Image (cartoon, rainbow, N blue to C red; front, side):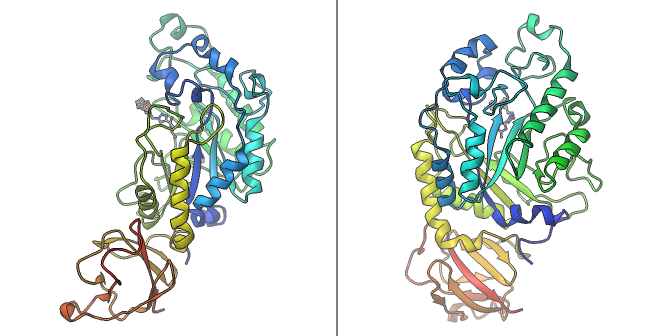
Length: 427
Ligand code: H79
């Protein structure tokens, strides 16, 4: 059995569970102020305050094919990009608004170019769509603790018709799933308080999404309970923990594993933030990915391209180093899932059928032990170069009769990021 068993529709989810690693792309007008995608909310900017960025948006170095190549070289198998974030600005050519990339100096449908570029590189393509909309006149400011105009009584109490906004949201999702060919993931963000479920007319929305793209998979942010034994029709196909890797993976109320995808930033922002240079290391990223897979989850790793349309250099360098590790060790990630074994003290396990992958994060003093696997391992090799590792009980481990042992060559670890030992299990 590949990638473990889940309580879900495997026919639609199979590719996603095999892929395990994707690229999240947060890009929009907020790349210009370069203080993150929440700048309007955090600095209480009105639509007028924000207009200069609409008038200036001109990403002359936008080459999504380069982004797709960087993702592919990192070992990522899919991507999700912000078609519209909370600021309401659309990177796509929507017939339902003028607030879109085609009306900026960019003058093009940037989502079309993204979709075509990533598809051409053989990656699956997802679209992020914000349920919140701080630009639309019918989106209410009251009740939303994050709305940029929350402190402005005149704006807050203005006349508006929320049902018109919901029709707009449905219309834009229809456009996204009609005009760009096959879309693999629909990633809604997010529901809060009363703004959840049927407030979005979520049952209808999901019915339309599945009609337009029957194979599509949907995240769990429309406000349903994906962990319920009887989830709502809009509960979604996978859970989406944000900036956290769930301690025990994700299970439903019956205790069955369900698909999930942790979305995680490289620094501390999703949208480009010029001042934030506190990046994770390649080692942290690889280990986060291994951690996810060891618990039956995916990792959606974010990049925030700048106003010119470039992925920041530090992000590219991390992706490239992660790619080096993935080329040598990808077999321990793709199609893999949790192993039904206790967490080893030196690292993590992932598994695919009779291949058990031991991810050694910390070289133990003495041999690496595999608890409870005495007599159950046929062969062991270093995954990176295929070299044989001898399975033998060392003289100083004679009393651990239930365990299997491998002694690593040399003193340190062949790969400091994560040294993977492939164990072929007895069937
Ligand atoms: O698109 C990314 C975020 O902008 C979005 N989801 C990811 C994928 C997101 N929207 N809301 N939230 C996440 C949760 C809200 C977090 C907040 Fe804050 C904490 C809002 C105010 C305090 C984060 C930190 C945003 C501003 C400061």
